[in-house]
Image 1 (cartoon, rainbow over the protein chains, first blue to last red):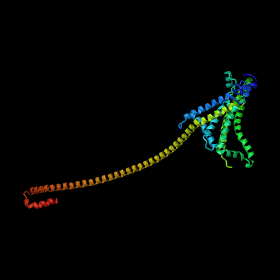
Image 2: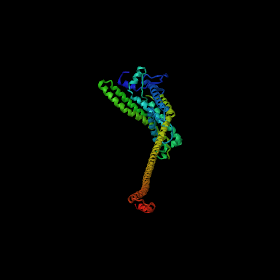
Image 3: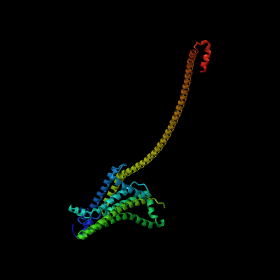
Image 4: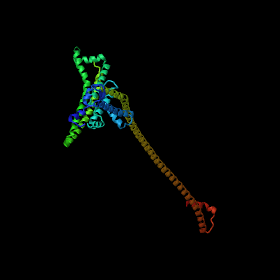
Length: 278
Length: 156
């Protein structure tokens, strides 16, 4: 575990990857290079594990509140859950005007799940990787949202919904028209199509990469701060103060990023439902 | 950090969680919230109604009290009048009775006086005759002088 600074950082940024090695066998990658050589046929076990685990935490907590939900006097858990649900419900209703029973639960799932995944960033960067290392697991990244696979997967799923509802609400032709007859007059359709196409593609990319970028950068700063702890008492104290300050600031970021992801999803889907007159 | 099967895995996971949320989490919570909202609204309405009823009852009770007071005052007035009247009547009766008693007493006294006068007259006549007989030393013819004596007696 100990090594140069570069090795330390590298270690913290490497996923626990299970995949197909170039020689055709399936195994856990023992180094970042080995993981890279696996190409697409690899799965980041730590990202998947933590994300599924946190998703289950969300489902368990909210299901528990839902099962015991009463229209009488709510308990503590129900109160908290209802506050979040009401918040998401109001946000959805203020943005999304069409009727669709999927949108609000989708936004709720995104908000809470992404928030929980981001929350892992506040656990001191060395705790769980060290623990895993002691247990014989070489790599362990515990913040799933610092893995672009995770954020892009969610963004592409939302993108698929955007395409589905665009075509469903406007018809295939209507959707094409919307892409082609804007912003210039119809005789410039090809240019319009390229412009609108870029706008469309930019949606999932911005959605996924924004979340990934924010969390990856935040994680990186935590790692750099963690490096200070090895530099003597002065650096240790300074690092401690910095870590605390950045964590406080990060509480804002992780909540905000989760909210932005959820709200943008609602906005994009609202746009997909809008049938414009041309 | 290469793109791999994680992408597909996470997409599937995402879909499953959203489905779960949509089926088993969202509806019961939102239903409970709506129901509570309605219950609270109904409760507020009911309490407003009860307030109004209470105010109505209070004003009704006040009116009733006012009426009872008036009635009581009327009864007291009546009673006082009646009492006065009875006292008046009693006074009148007493006066009449008193006058009557005085009248009868006067009549009786007069009768008594008359009777005493009669007796006295008789006795005086006898006395006078006896006296005159003794003065004259002779008997007086009672028959002769009776008229004169009776006249004397009547003059007494």
